[in-house]
Length: 340
Image (cartoon, rainbow, N blue to C red; front, side, top):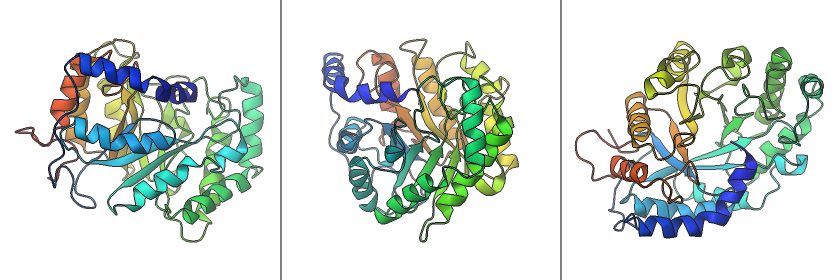
């Protein structure tokens, strides 16, 4: 989803919260001690995209309270793709996220990193191909080395890097379709540059859109040695008119799981949520059940309108499903994030 939409999310959070209260979905009781995952590796790390900057950190506690104490172990944000300086990690909010990560050893800091400046500048395919070839030859290595140095300096050397996300789509400048071979070589150069930083322990998450989109995402896979996690962004929208179709379609959810297993990788869902079909509790139930059954390293719902459930009052039925399913008080099937 676009960075513009993510930045706008912060501005409408207060309005959305009013909508939740009016719908009878106000704050839940205070968290219970020990709710959710209690140690490193104890379960799926639950997260949400709440705001790109420091307010996102502040809102994690509020979302946890609303969920009745569910432990949110995945903190998720994005670097702006407007300038190389920002891709190098200039935003001051990284310090806030780094402090949040440092408070607990079992937390994950998940950072989406664009591969080019002007990442949403409607760059034509022929120019994208030129940029990819330049990247593959090492022209932009220094920017990613600086990002790696900044993250290590902030004491988040184990950041999960969602690099060049939704690369199989049509929109971002870091898209794969104009030259898949150069795209893969460029990914490999970025990973090499960031791994060259002393003290780093980065994990790299390859996260396409669900479905074929502009190009089959398998054609963009850069290699097992430079990918640690096979992710997928999966919103309630076509391709697929039902959740079963989202699972079984070419390059869909099942193929992601099977591909990751064949390549001995963990899976993730960096972005998911409601979209074209409005307030859809069936999608919400099925996606949460899929996550519980397949145990990704982490998942992060996009929590602003129209996708979200806490900061968006437009989806009260789906919000109830999300809240009930992730509550640590839920009986029977353990909530994602709870210790097995």
